[in-house]
Amino acid sequence: MKALCFPSCRRLLPVLLACLALLLTLPALAQEGPTPDPAPQPQVLIPSPPQLAASSWILMDADSGRVLAEHNADERLPPASLTKLMTAYLVERELDRGNIAMDDTIPVSENAWRTGGSKMFIEVGERVSIRDLLYGIIIQSGNDASVAVAEHLAGGEAPFADLMNQHADRLGLTNTSFRNATGLPAEDHYSSARDLALLSRHIIQDYPEHYRIYAEKYFTYADIRQPNRNRLLWRDPSVDGLKTGHTEAAGYCLVASAKRDEMRLISVVMGTSSEEARAQETQKLLSYGFRYFETLKLYDRGSVLDTPRIWGGQSNQLRVGVDRDVVMTVPRSRNQELTAALEVQQDIEAPVSQGQRVGTLEVRLGEEVVGEQPLVALEAIEEGGFFKKLIDQVQRFFSNLIGDWLG
Image (cartoon, rainbow, N blue to C red; front, side, top):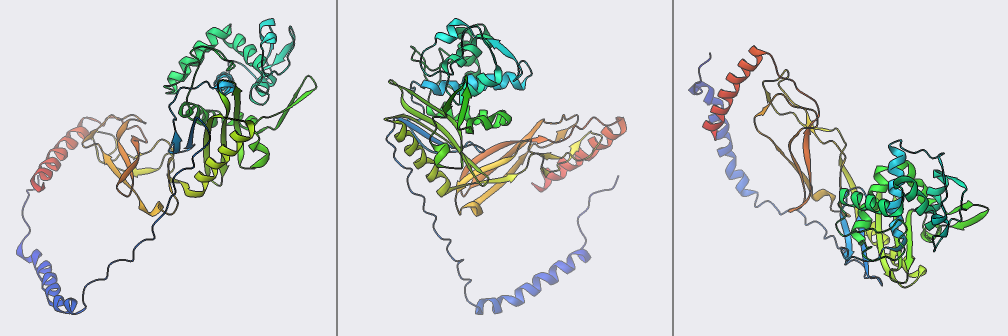
């Protein structure tokens, strides 16, 4: 075993000569005068968010989840037909899991046919495809279609509402309670702007193959052509969803999403006075977000950010990174202020499984922490053999000893 020793005087000679050369240059540096301060960066001015003629609203970036503007976003309010976002989400989930298929047909009960309010106009006893019912829920806001799928998926509207609430809990919707699949007025049936934005984010990200339905302007069933009630689909080509709602208690509500370049925003406006008001107030929010903010991808999923030493494994290094894209939403022109820091677990021992958390990625905008994401093992490292582990134990002992001595 090689002994530890201090460096000899001969090895120090080049260092001493370098220090002497530096001392000789000091008078010249002093004559040059003080180093000028760096040019000040232009101040980025972000106005206050617009104030809307609505009871509650929120503006959220769909990728980063950052909230850009909000007002009474956690207030529990009647959601009207915005309820159908959850109804459609559960249909999409069952489609994705293979439990149902778009071409499946289901019978229409008298109960579904009799449901009041907005209709898809399905008839008692006829068989309707899941595809048509999903389009009818999203585009035509069909209460009859919503009850039909609730009965098919859960045996009735009450057990389907229970299922809706279970998924609301799973998705972290803390101010939401459903009592039916339609949004027709019911006691203890409520949601909030924030919860509806979070639900919409899941619709967009979890089942993108079905999200295109929300952009459809018309749907025809039984020779009845009905328009999508989201007026922004005609006014703004960047808007491609999601859902409108209206009852006397809820007022006029709109959940919208728009994508410009690589940035997608979700807005929720609740409790406006008219169809036109909900469209105009939503447009104000979206314009504010796109004008003053940008969303940046910092790291791709699977990017290797560090390769720390791993002890007792078949390999000496572990590839560490992120298991999903790292995106941040920041005020425009402040992206140069973003910094990232890694905090990696010390003394990592094998075995390590792929996806195991081994640290944290922290992102700052200036002095403000704007995001944290787990650092995970991008590969599995199995234990090494007896002699490999023995050698690593010796190396680890002396590595920690030197670290303590230097520290």
